[in-house]
Length: 388
Image (cartoon, rainbow, N blue to C red; front, top):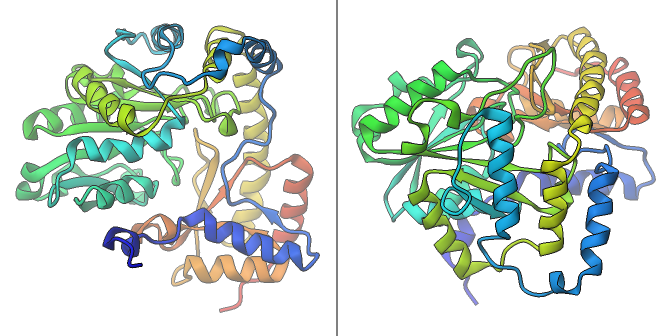
């Protein structure tokens, strides 16, 4: 039976291919260290696990959850945004719990993109922004992110006709994969741009709690007028080391939240209620774990960067996110470099080209590996010699 054309157009998801290569090597009995995937190795804080265990004893949590989530969890999200960013949210109309942020990012395109509509998408960027657009029948206009422009999109480079046809603009700071950061003046320019062209701003902010060197990331919703034109996606995955728990939220513009809720209510049944109760414990309980894991990630960052530089790569130390984004020597392709690395020393990195054309010439290294594995990777990297 012939599948739909949209399935034929789907590329393999980036990390499926990375995982396949790792598994092949390990099946051959080789010790592979992966710096490719941003999945925190640090355990979920114990008080959250304890809350989950208690919630599981309540058999009412075992039934279907509502798509719009528990009112108590929505209130916790609103309270956390108020404490953390001084952003006021109505928990009934401006907060929507999501099954992690990925599903909401993918679903959002179906709320706004009709066949032929345009989404403005960063390049390099998280693949789901453009994949969601494609699945909804839309077209992607790429916004190149360059090192020279601090990996921020150049709004002035967007043609007038494209800006007038665009329905969405995607942003992500601290950024994956480049680890770049953005400030409020930049977000306020985005708000002005969105108001001028009637575009919904979609800010993906899962890394706001992963920061170094006393840097404190901001929320897009802190910008003046942000809720008039945009929403923000967040998650407990990176903040509380809960990637497998699949719990996140979309917050902001009430009309956009309502549209996303209507899509979700027809396609899923919401987050497991016991997980939402554990999420309340995360948001309302001790926040010490955030500081502790940032200390750990910063130590790893500071161990990794010198060896990358000694290999001839250029690295700007990141102030946020879980990644080190490194520029390869001129004329070296990221896929070739990554392939040589795994073949020669059994270390896996992510080729920048996997995040878009503008990612060519870079690699991404994740800081979410246990210290003993990172030490092995650093030792192996110090012995690697690039073959040209």
